[in-house]
Length: 282
Image (cartoon, rainbow, N blue to C red; front, side, top):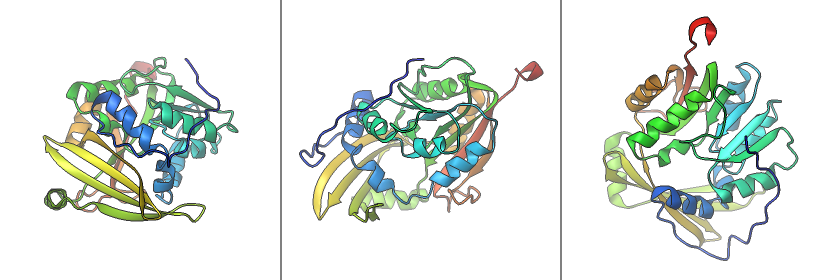
């Protein structure tokens, strides 16, 4: 296993405001190179941290792998539970933020890697988690199945995979909002009391493909804007891909408050799947 950990210097986010179009792997890297500065502030108060910590506390001891660890927001909280945590991300900019944040956590190891080709041994992980829907960036059938297969490969028999997927309003409402071209606007108050407006707009591209655009405003001025192309997941597709990988759905929820998943009221699709155990539990 190649482990990367240390401190990285980064510049002033207010100096430039490039726009990313987020197509393909290079586009995703460009997108996160821009939004890495703003994600922590925009996700403050999301209410998901306790849910992830509670879920990993339910399983056996052993290392936890976070797929798409980003800036280390969830990673740090998982380490506070006493578990050894491995955080994986493909974005250099996101990992730079994570390294700077996690220097005082000796039980966290950060790795640069791809969800479709995990740099880990077979059956080396008891529990893997994927907060904030990192799989949305996989837009082809082959890439999606490959990522699920890789997650299954690195799990112990009986090991657990916890996934978060974005969930949209009922399709007719989402199509109407997408067609209007009007972004959703949220005002986020950070831990330091600073206020930031986040404009979020999703446009349908056909076949389940979407383009998400995020604009961040501070003191009324646009500080950054970036977009990416993704593809929605349906419950049916997810269940099929998990089954093909030898994973069985054990639980699902519609939000971090523990509500059951109901398509018309869900705020997210949260799924727990387990790797099937072979003969004698292997």
